[in-house]
Image 1 (tube, rainbow, N blue to C red):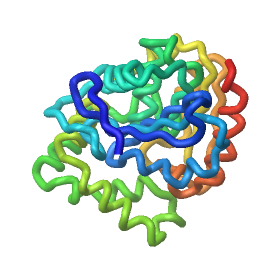
Image 2 (image 1 turned 90 degrees about the horizontal axis):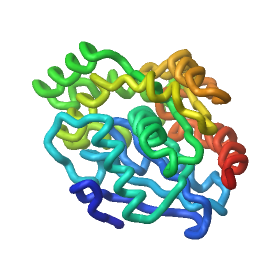
Image 3 (image 1 turned 45 degrees about the vertical axis):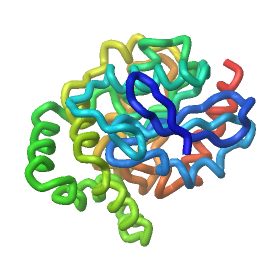
Image 4 (image 1 turned 120 degrees about the vertical axis):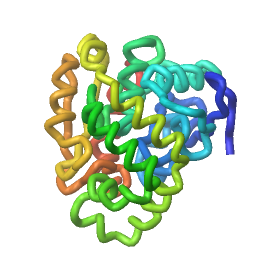
Length: 262
């Protein structure tokens, strides 16, 4: 287990691949941790340096009292990369992780050479939707919404998989303060203006059955960035790197290779 102090909190991170390779950093989604990339990494080219971390309040990264903001979460990964003396990186972010990637690319273009927006957008949901979720969880815990969340996370075929109970357990064991802190960040985040100014290679990845960030939302965000492309994985939900890692790797690998030396 690797832990370092960045932006005033203890951050859990790990690395795989070639320690001298081009760095690729992965940021997890709401209600998960860095293990969401476990099945994907063995399918990716071995020459890259793969870094993963748990977003604030998730996994083994320190929980702080909310509300959080996207700027705060961007500052976390900025501090992590500076402490590790890593960059520029290829940034792969899923859901809120993709919003963190957009924010970092806008704030610190020197730290991000290429961007992967997986099941993510410049604005996800609206304030009233997130506020309602926050109130439900405050009253009954994450457990009360777990089944509905899993239905958005996974496609209709995978939802019957024996893997799903483990992901449900991970979701419901997410520290409530961390989960709600990130919900508060999503409630008010609209990165449309800054994302539309980005000028870096960008790949969008969507799931055709994603109930949290539908494909058209990902495509609309990709249209904000000149030259960005978007791939839709048929039958996948909100976390395709878990349910369809082979298809995900087949999309991500060419992008990594193309922009390794950009």
